[in-house]
Length: 443
Figure 1 (cartoon, helix red, strand yellow):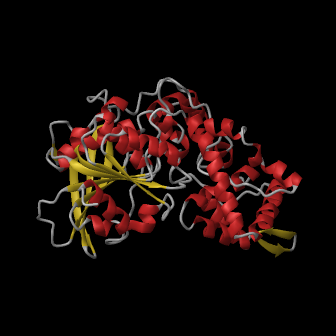
Figure 2 (cartoon, rainbow, N blue to C red; figure 1 turned 180 degrees about the horizontal axis):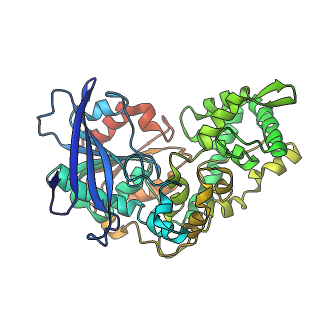
Figure 3 (cartoon, one colour; figure 1 turned 30 degrees about the vertical axis):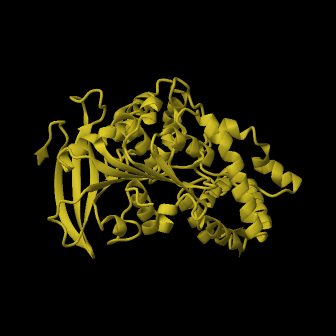
């Protein structure tokens, strides 16, 4: 056990996979960084270094996963972008607070905090500001105080932008993939921009797979009539079925949705019904059991300046009546799927979220969120920054991202339509190689 001046502590256990030496690291950090002597939580991170280079003094790269609410990638060996990173870095794959093995937050653990208000108070510490404070404590332990490079995917890019706003002295460079946030936009602005993007993705899906127009309507009509309960206890409503459109933001998402829809029904003694295989896939796609923070804090990651989110995606959806599934079925028009958004009905449908409905209501009503970004500091930024901005990203608005890119001094954007939001997964080594070359001034 080693202690640093900030009070974070670390323990480590090492082991091997092909081509890489991995070390499990555990850290102790304050739950509330404003109260460093108060309650502490444990964080987990996995260090990765190329086999044979364990003893070398390599620069560090910290990876911040998308979400919110997802632990870092669990790679096998040197999969995806990790192999490229290990050519010249020692990598730290951090499970952000509340995710993965870092003091996980879910319907099982949150009741230890007390009533719904107490649980919401606890969760208020799990946004980008708390995550970045964690990173700074960990950095002093891991690097001895030397700055490191960060790679932020999606929400990880939001964290990187907060890092640049509050602790740029901890960074040698920042790499962002599909994750430049609006600096001052409310959640309403985010969803008002999102629904038209989602509609474009749905129309493009139907253009590719025109047979899915009838299939989606057929499944939607069945769901509306029967509201089946899926094997995991999830109540499949029409709105829930529409939310499968979240897949359309990934490179292979349209294909996955098509394959799901094409074999939805089977004949049974009681008539045609949704197949077990279909139901199992939908249950896995819609459940928040593994990442409840995503549902609880998804709108709160945009909250600042004293404004409540107040179920923004649900309210703004009312401005886009073309997404009303019942009206689409009644009028004979194509059913529109929805995208990356969280709604009150999910806390009634999903057994992993039902016990947390009051907590979600409390968070939606809060107005005391701290500011996340410092526009003045970003305008004077001196840290090299490169960002992959995906041309028609369904999850992060390209217009918002480019305005933010122009607001951060020295940021070099790479705007591409080669990838969807999951470009770091799909394009792995090539995407990372380009961003590293950009911050080094090589391209």
